[in-house]
Length: 260
Image (tube, rainbow, N blue to C red; front, side):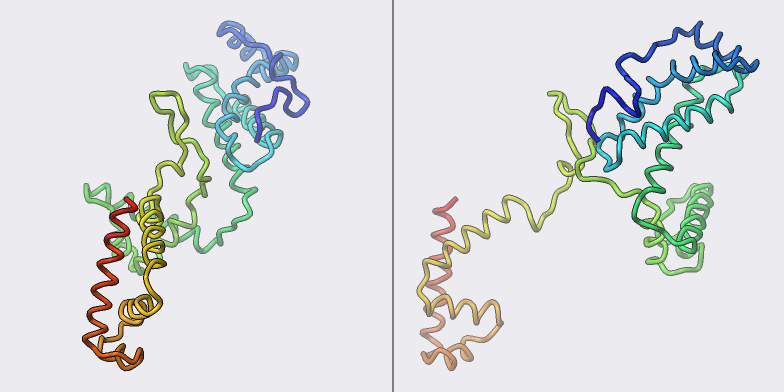
């Protein structure tokens, strides 16, 4: 979603901002059935909806649709709010609005979780809660034992109900003000810049070897053959194979050290 000034035909830049006194007065009147007060209260709180919708800018969803879902949450919050609770409307309304937006994003997701898996996940959560109430660490092993199921079923059920996230979701802002995304926090020991550099240097060093030396190393370290087996295949003595192998390895080490 891109940042928009107009959403669902609403000019968000021109939305009014209610004072606390105005909000309380409009809430009192709308609860008495004043439709005009209800309309003004809804419009006056669309800025609140917009501020929450912005949290989901990175999601692959239409901004208008998410804003509409937030407005539905706003209407539900207005209908369910009790002024006698002694809390601000925003305190009550924010969870309602967020819940409606998340429900829309979840239900609109192409991934579908079967009822049986959701039921298993619910039982997993109940088992975890029960274990934690005993002041124990709710490990996968303990949860599986509590439910009398295999550990992989517990893992699968929890994974199934976890909301998928984008690698481009913002995690937090660092001191310099730059936004750090989830992909910035992921480290792959097998596929990182250092490993790629080493592989490139190794390939370059291998390319500098003679054809027979490359074949000996391939047979020795990729196919796992002995020096005697290699000597029979290449047509040279075992001593020559040993000497060429050591020479090739030494050459590779020197070339890689030179690269770095």
